[in-house]
Length: 273
Image (cartoon, rainbow, N blue to C red; front, side, top):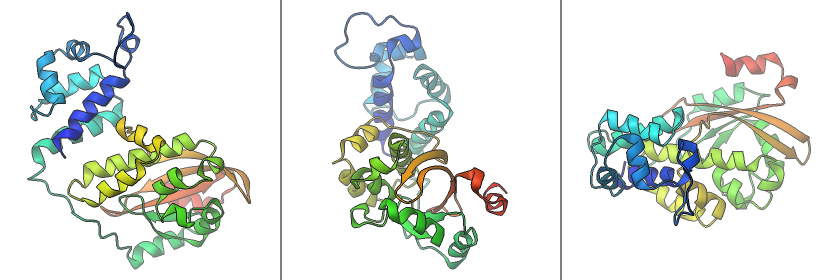
């Protein structure tokens, strides 16, 4: 993990935290959003100079106690703490813990058989950067009317959400879906630090203000189990529960439970077992 990403995370989280959230008076209008560096340092029990060195990438070996104190000061939740720890660990172990490099993302026949066996429950395979790699007929039938196979989607779920003209119309809680995409990409970046193909993808997505804001804020959520509310052009209002499975380092299976109350039990058992 690059030193700058750990520093950027600290700065972004400090900017998002309001004084009243940590028991401090808001006082007069602040020139910059969020907490001052001195305030976070005081909350964490470290010096402002030391926090400045961390934010500037001049110190890359914070102790576990300092990381815990900073996580408490920044009011990080469990998912954010895990991400924060991985960023810190990556600064020290970038050379000793190499990752898989450029994504190959080959979907094996076995994996294709797995998603086919889930029929009629919609399921598909995502690559590390959210490329759509394989799917069963049920998912294609559901996703194609939404425009996920249109040229503007580019064969990528994140690109669909931010670039497709109808994505926000079809996804009632589009903001939640956008958070899922940004978080999944951020999580992949921490896992695959030497895959340089991400840079071009992120640069392209940053043309869209909604993505750029989420990326700069270092949005990190539990994106593996979520609910999407979809106004489907053929099926009307649909509630989709998402479950994400990781059968391989580079690939994940995403299962869409469409209106679970109407789904037959055998399809549910495939996901819950």
